[in-house]
Amino acid sequence: MNVAVKLKVKFGLRKDPTDNQISAWLRDVVNRVHCGQDPEDAGHEAAFVHFKGVDQCLYGSEADNIQALLKALAAKP
Image (cartoon, rainbow, N blue to C red; front, side, top):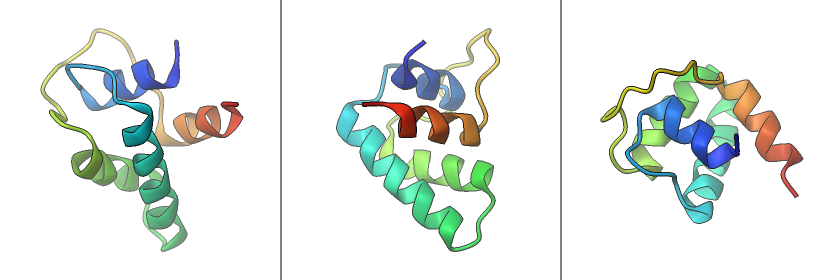
């Protein structure tokens, strides 16, 4: 499963986020964590800023935690 789909599942989005939205979300999360915020809280708050329709859908799949998503994005070419 690619990172866009993982983010869609994690945050209950109706559609996959764009590469630009993902990049902005990533920068925001890293900045928030660097300032001392819990990664899960940082990821969720940043999702409301950068993605449309957060928590609009509930998928029957277990979502990754924020640390796993950050690791997947770091490994992305």
